[in-house]
Length: 126
Image (cartoon, rainbow, N blue to C red; front, side, top):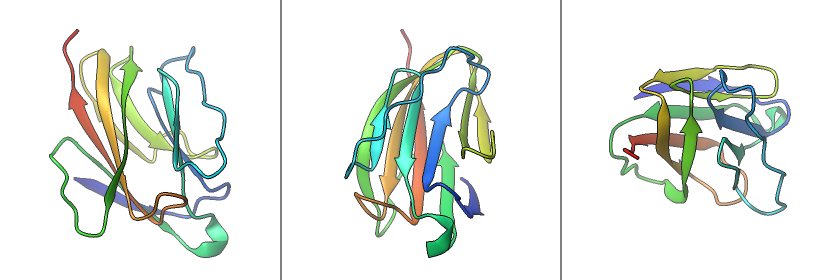
């Protein structure tokens, strides 16, 4: 599992294939931790004024103490890259795999605005 601590200016992380020029960013949904389209997930996290956010990216099964499954969603990865980034940083963490689609599970310490997030990737075959 790769992890990083980030100061997130706008309080939102994106999970997307950054090579996908046709990715559609989901509209923010008040009170929801995760919003999604087929090509992008957004995750509400603590803004920089509340401190850093611990973010992890893994392909392992996740059963992390203190975290709850917030969402599971299928994501198109036509370029074979899953990346977590912010509005300012394209790729804070990334994982390369075969082009296609993956199932993304988002684990977080809150259902509203998280300070700890684990994004778990499971490859699907279509």
